Image (cartoon, rainbow, N blue to C red):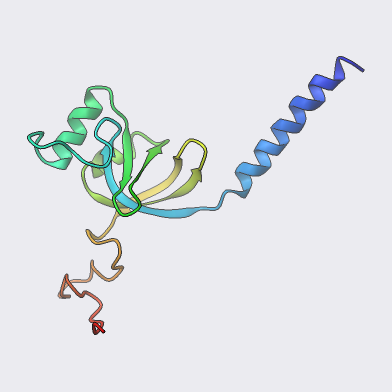
Length: 136
């Protein structure tokens, strides 16, 4: 019985972990693809956001999603797809591991520069008021 107790404990933890991961809901995260070395802001003199991100990743950094609105940097489990979006505003669909702040990426697609305005990508719209809403 003494030998079974540790085994049962490990199995219980494993099943609990698997269930917790299944409960994680898919979400959409909006931000810029950056690098783990710069985080939320690229230093001056490092070129464009894209150039800086690619240079830092080439130097050992990792691609991240920098959410300027929430002031948080998310790690990305996929390190291949973000390369083509380096320095750009994107929408990442995936599940978040809150403990490690890592997004398990399902997809990445371009997003409007102003993520607060879902209409901002529509052509011919006023970028300051893309939905044409009247201000109070």
